[in-house]
Length: 195
Image (cartoon, rainbow, N blue to C red; front, side, top):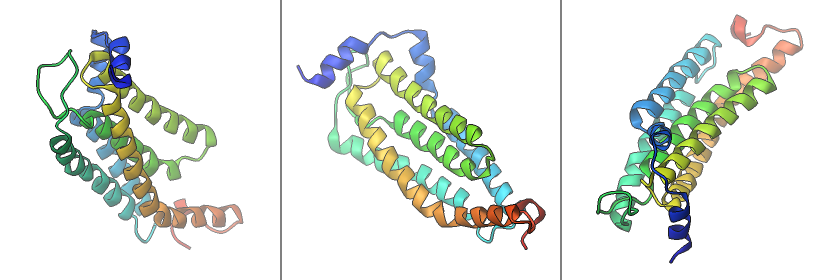
């Protein structure tokens, strides 16, 4: 028996908690959280007078739309069967719920990080996003909806997409950093508008 199957057999224990955790990867939950972060990041960037305030929210929305555009063809190509806990069928690899959760919660964190003032708040945001993604992954495997490898593959895909988002928004965030550096030297802060 493959390592993936052995791990799944050891972890599967369908219960209400695992069902609820896996539901955090639903589009109706994760994408709504991302949409709120997109609006907040855009509003903050516009109020701060950033020249391309729209770029981070647009990039965040774009990487989210890439999830189904990449996951659906991969599911069809791999044609992998599900665990014994789900009805017979194929299309379980990679996990769409895990990819959705990772990109939505990860992108939300990346977009909001520049606007948090304290290191503690930034760490809390990153830890919260990571905890949500891990909760979804655990819930999916524990409930038996996915093999562990399905979830790991989606984690890899999510990492690539979040890296692209970080690269795309890095320059836009640099304007915010420069504005904050100016504010510490006595010139107008980003809150009072461009100088």
